[in-house]
Image (cartoon, rainbow, N blue to C red):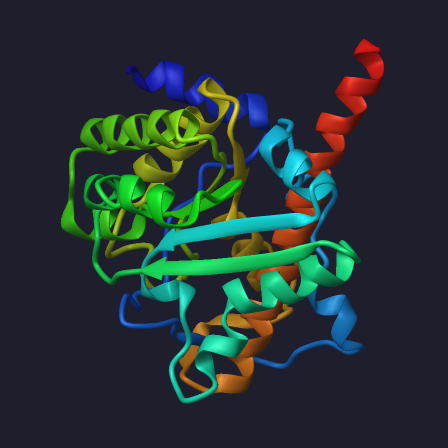
Length: 267
């Protein structure tokens, strides 16, 4: 894969080439700064930053059947510490928001989180997850460990494409989720190549991407919170995770709606 091919893929999505991530694999390192009120406004992002570009037929089928099972395959940043952390991390908030959006549908979101795993290591976890849960959707959060460990971006791409193929063969829709953004680590860990690869794979294989990196960068630049000042205050983490849950809900419901619209068009 040449640099020119990657560049063209990125330009098609009209997203900037970004770099940086939060340096917390043992849990989300939180960001300080004042949050705007009202609370509902915190999760807002520009039009097009979080949107479904491709249909999610498995999700649409599951919604029609009134039961939607989702697996989150990721790292420790999908969890929060403390006794109440599991209920306030983004998988749990996503489950709550999606259930509220889909009345009458039983929604279950199950996280499978292991710290410091590369994409290749996560890819080996796919078959057991599919066998155990048979989810309609898998959210695959990856990229951070590969960047920190300096894994060849080409090997990262191969692992992603193998994982996408395995998930599709197992009957699951897919959302790729990239790394977190932190201006404090941009100069220390170069992640732009890995972010580019994820965007390329998403476009090449018609997979929706939740660009967590760009979302957090937008929040930082607009002053929603300050990523330059690190803190471990749990209330900030909970708000960040709640917003991720709400935005994922938007992405998934849009993907299901695209499937329904396509079916009506073909009738």
